[in-house]
Length: 171
Length: 199
Image (cartoon, rainbow over all chains, first blue to last red; front, side):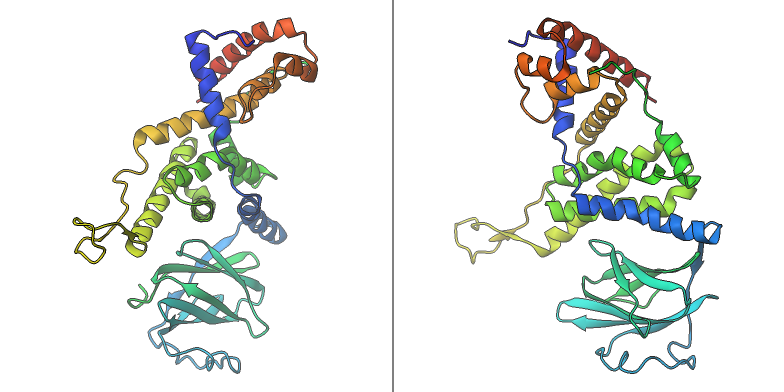
């Protein structure tokens, strides 16, 4: 019924066929990726400015900076590495703990009052956690490796660009 | 179906600039443009849908971070493919470390030395495959820039589903059966032209 095509057209038709067979990303994954920029744009729009990115650095005095964490936050986490990261916007008390072969990262945010979410990247997929009522956050079931933590706070993102879970001290 | 003119899609560089300027929907447009290409890279390397989704999210998260600092916005496709490839290979390497494939040893005993070997594809994403995936991407993009009835006709004839009979196509597109063949030839010529003019 469909008459044969000249060779050039045949090749193009084959290319189109193959192009149509490539898989689309699952809808929920696509939505998450699209929302990524949307949320940043909304935050930026609210502040009428570009998003600022602030790097938090590890403090040499670890957790001895005088703040008082919320009741029960530290007590519930098994012993592991602990650091205090600091920027002009906030301090982040960050801890890692072993859970069998996997690891957990928990922490608490001091300052950056507009913050509601924390993003953790570096594992097999980016993870996001809501800050709790005492501004603590938890990520469980992590593979050992190098991670990056971002706190979104209004027109500002506070970033811990690199820290190691299950191996060495943060760079 | 009333004819509509071909409209070449925005260039990659224009889309990146639109994202940088925070134009509404620009980021969504950029993600949708490269969706299939970037999701297909890990899938073709043998990763499952969940792992491919991880790669997909990571790649676009990286792009989101680096969008304002890309020095060659017109090369965003190459940047995305390279990042997807790198992330895919990282996951494959991770998988090889953790999921050995049990096969019979040299003498058939499971407890023989060498009974567990890794399922290693030495080159899961060769350049030729990546070139082919990018050609497909180019074809999809050009098809999206074709006007009607070409886009509809080529979509029906060469889409993912089996092509329906000419009578069905004629009814669907409101064109005489006899004009389908010549229209198809014109549409393929337009598509080729559009692909050649795309940067």
